[in-house]
Length: 77
Image (cartoon, rainbow, N blue to C red):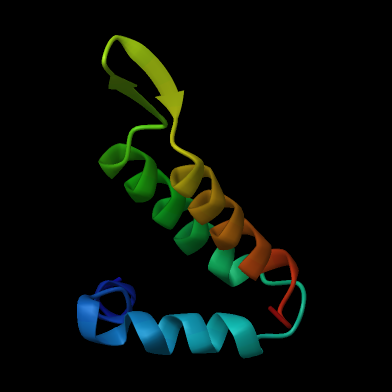
């Protein structure tokens, strides 16, 4: 477990993404880490924002979630 924690610490995020990109299918060992990444992203970023009493969908937030998922499904991106 300590190896996973170290792997997900800030200096190693780039290494994690490179390993994920180069990993062969199926990428099941990375699934838990990707779900964790989505959960942390959702906790820190609201999907809807209220500006002048109007609710807006944060398109950047949706695009970022799509990017996280598409990196799992499409290794060439």
